[in-house]
Image (tube, rainbow, N blue to C red):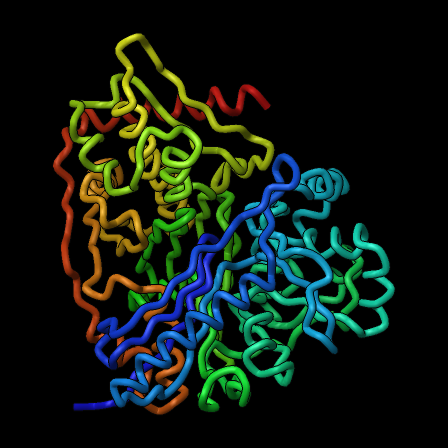
Length: 496
């Protein structure tokens, strides 16, 4: 028996996890801690960066102890993370100067609107593949620099460091030896030119951000240093890093042009591999770095939906109509249809392809016979409708006839969601045998760096579907449902 294993750190929006895999992708041990989101003002979303680190460290120590107890050897560590979330910290002490501003935060919507009015969006998109939106890191960095006393002067003096969560965790794991990020996370900052693969001086000037803050950018498979002596019991090599959605693309082995993965976690994020040539979207999708290996870049089209699993959390925590997410499948199936009810879960604005950060969520079509089951069903159905908007835009951008998507994330445990996806998208939906695709993608990157896997393509050849869903819905019914969704979205947009 091969005693080697791989440790993936998967730091997400709602939890921090450490997962230990064997070399076939089987989960050996998992440790997880929920992470609190703070909402100090309407539209603001923050996390305590110290909590992010403390929880991540506790999880890593938990799975390391389990591995040592079983006589296993951790060959390498891979890191994957919630993207765009912004942290600035003291280079000497590692102490954050302000809470982490989460990717969902909308406080900089006015800044983005002002820059758009000044006609900067075309330049930004041409360099970064992104649209001008509070989602990305640049305006979050600028907000901290301009609103926290003394921070701008300290940043310009080189005393502070910026990073997305990957970079912050790497700094802490190596006790400040490594201030680095990878090309996928860099591509989400709105400061990185994804054509030249460098921090862009024009963008730094536009957002008034000192270059001294920024980390070094590395390939996804690289020497990211070793774990420091006082962090874990051994100096394990850190050999892979990728933003969560790109890590899922890798974990789903979408290495051929035209392949799509769609992840249903806190939000929903669909990525299509578009190959080695940069192409700006004409359908208000994003162009992003899928992965960078040995300096060679593969690009992806991305559609971002801000509320997927988080909408189910809202049903549980704010409405109180369920006690556990697992109840939603039975409730959705307990009624024949949505009874005309639609939920547009724009709780943190509308993402792709609409991009309206100021949009608000609605429930529409309510009548006296509407029940909590209809609302729950409509919330689950919204994930398919939102995905349809993304996939339709991807098909127009790429010219590809979409036939199969590889889906993952917490919501794919819900058979109702998966079947409704297949019906509304009119495509086959494949669920992978290795369900922890995001963490597995990070683990695979580390495995290649450690010499455990010869290549990522080798890993891709072993990908297997656990379950497939094929379309069952009548075309007429599908069109009626989509027309109802379109009407509901128009109601949201009419309120802007």
